[in-house]
Image (tube, rainbow, N blue to C red; front, side, top):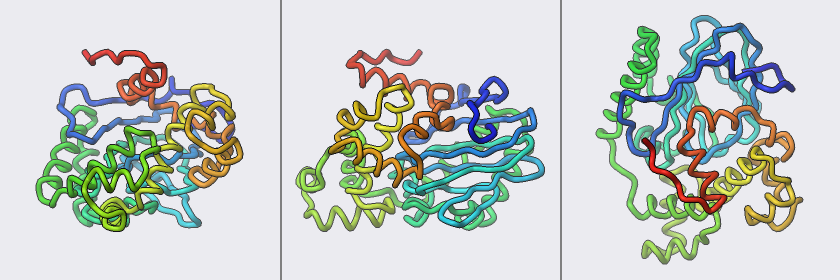
Amino acid sequence: MLPTGTSIDWASVEIAVPRAIRPLPGISMAGFCQRVPAVVDLAMVAHPDVTLLVDLSRGNALGYDVGGRREYGSVVVGLHPGEFRATGQGTGECLQIRLEPVVAAAVFGASAELGGAVVSLDDVWGRDAGRLEARLRATASWDERFAIAVEMLGRRLGARPTVEPEVVHAWRRTLASRGRARVDGLAEEVGWSRKRLWTRFRSRLGIGPKEAARLVRFDHAAHLLVAGHTAASVAVESGYVDQSHLHREVRAFAGLTPAAVAAAPWLAIDDIAWPAASRARLSARRGERIPAPR
């Protein structure tokens, strides 16, 4: 976490990932602890997962600015929040949970939190939000915190209906194709009409299949930019018409230019907090065989 315009010093941020527990399918977690007082002003770039940020700070809570609104504390971040910043100062801790959209739909049971909104966790879970924060703050062990989160998420997953397999297939095909699968083709694959797929997809995930494809394509492009590729080459590899098209999409999803996205510190944590996913992404891009995790 850093003052605006500087490179993040990850040496001052403690990052924990689950090692002693088995993660739930479609869910990843990481814990962040900033022990050295600092000014926080982070551009948080859209991601093709729903993000749950549980603020464990003791004192001033983090603030989140999006679309002229401001939320404090623990929040649920939807799939397409647009320009989105996290701000604050001092020290603090945060548990970040990424949920695949089809899993998030079961966990939260509503599409409002999936389709671009940034909503207080209190508004989504009510008293359960406070109970979760209290239990997490009561222990300083990240392994225990991850276990508590897995327990609560698992309980919610088991209490709600799952998303239709046709919607699950359409989403995962969109992800695997890096946003290039056509809606007509997806509808044909699952045996639905285009209209039915569009309606069910949006009602479950909060965005339509075309917007989902744009988000996935943007995410691929954003990580190519962070990896040092030029905007021109990223536009070609990601399937944009030209560099201007890339620029418009980056602005729409992040409120930033391609150059600013390339320097976005929030994306840099992928190699630290989610190294397996980052290795898979890089290996797939290079055509390499992905080694099995040890």
